Length: 364
Image 1: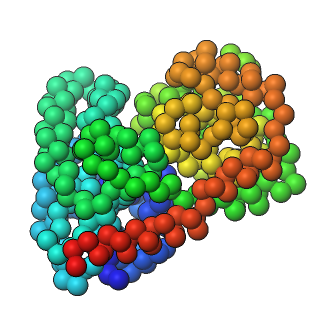
Image 2 (image 1 turned 135 degrees about the horizontal axis):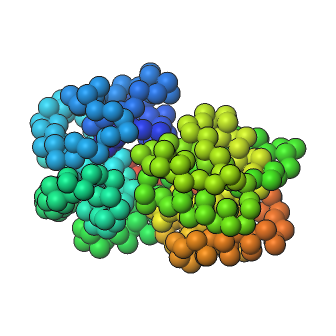
């Protein structure tokens, strides 16, 4: 089967872990994207980026927002669809709207409807200079109209969680299947063999406003708990300047370093309202409890009192209370790892293969 894959932006995050498994299943499929970070793990991939590649710094990938809609519309006309059996889009915002010829089905693996258009608009705009915000707000409104216009572009939606399936129904009036993202649990399980929990809490995420790493920093500071933060992003320097003596920023860490950091931590803290959240499952695979917001994806992956602790609201006092509860409990690594095993790479591969076959038959 000949596939074309489309992915909004290729960076180093949870969506790219999903993309890597898609690439593993269909290594010959070209991957169309708007912008790609030039990282070693992508060197052998057939990535076909836009004309903006090399002109926009990776950390500023959102700045050309007003241009992306027209670029996606034109991309659909430039792709050679001859003998293509299926378009598989991996998308939050733009590539889900890629139009295919009438004979080519479009299967969309959607991480969520674009948060900057349907929710969290204020958090999105806060990342831009105040003088640009009115212009960006108008661009967001234009995006939403365009997004609604193309809501029928996918022939089949696959959501990454039940939480996202509800969002897709609310935003587009469309049903969707649920297929949890793949989590490569084995390296984290292996890294934890013979390793006792350390004295630090750990979090790993992209340093953007809505991720709310500031809550974890403040809570750990109040409790005097050491915190290690892995990740980069537009708020790195701002957060580094505001951090107290118990917080350490590690920046980008390799996969091997991540395995050891997860295995050596006392617990993993995950404050954002995420659609799924791969990192908490990785922490469970290392046998470490997760302190997470009890909403959205982590409400489905972390069982309160069994594999971690939920906090109800994104407030410092709630995180403090959850950390105190985590400290007071005894955790069995085998129970935590059994929870992680429910979200395996093999399950994702089997599910996606079946859905691709089903979607490819829709227009035959």
